Image (tube, rainbow, N blue to C red; front, side, top):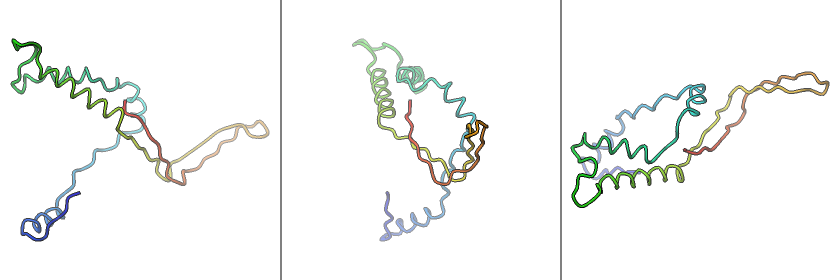
Length: 136
């Protein structure tokens, strides 16, 4: 967390500018049906696939691609692979995914009553629901 220093003109100006700056607009939420269908179609994170795509594009930055050095393999490409593997590993083993089910979500259930007749029950959530997930 940054602190504002009011002992200088620049500190006071930074405070004023921060008060009137527009925050970044959050991304819009995906519709639930799209999440349910789309999540099953995703292949998951692959360090080798990501590293391949990065390496294939490094010529756009003017960097050599492939085994172009006389002394052996391209160490820059090896470093890209190592870096992506570590990033993916950190995301998959250390990231936390939390979800919240808000108040007022419609809930309906069906079942068989005491007399063997189907019973339908409808209601809404009355407290916040919290869940956890895993990045894959």
